[in-house]
Image 1: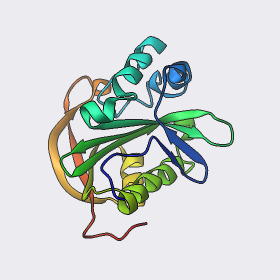
Image 2: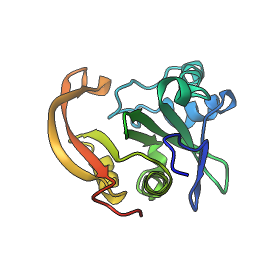
Image 3: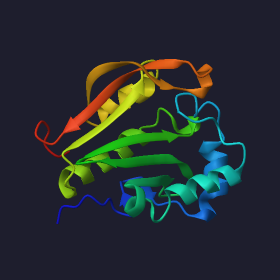
Image 4: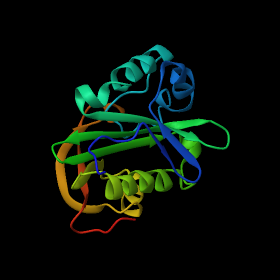
Length: 187
C-alpha cells in the first residue's frame, strides 16, 4: 500500500539505510559529520564533537518523521557495517526533498548513485509522493552529477539561494532539481 511514511530501513545491493541511534554517533562523527571537506557544500559547519552529532541524531531520530515530517538514514556498507554518511528526506506537502552526503573516501565509487536510486525506487514504487526535489550549489559538480544519475532533472537556477559556512557565509547560487511522478517511470 503506498504511503508517505518512509521505511525505517532500506536495503540496496551494497548498502543499508537505517534510522541512526545514539550508538551510531561516534562512528558517524568520525566518518562524516566532522569532516571539513565533506561539509564544504553543506549548510552546516563540520561537527566539533561526537556530542554534536549525537544531538543531530536526537533531533532527526526515531520520532522525527511523525513530529517534523523528516527522516534521516545513516548509510552503512552492508558487508562491513561501516558508516559512510547520511541521506535525508523531508516531507513538503505531497513532495519529498532530499539531501545527502558521504565521507570523501567514499566519493567516486558509486555509493550515492546506488543509495539515491534505492530511495527514488522506493518513492516511485511504494510512496504517494508525487515529486522529489532538491537544490545543489552550482559548483558542487560531484553532487550535480549524482542527482542526474539517480533520475532527477535540472529545473532552474536559484540565484543566491543558500549560505554555506565553508564559503564565509556568502549567499551562493544553486540549481534546483526534481523528479516528478507523471514524467518518469519507476527505476
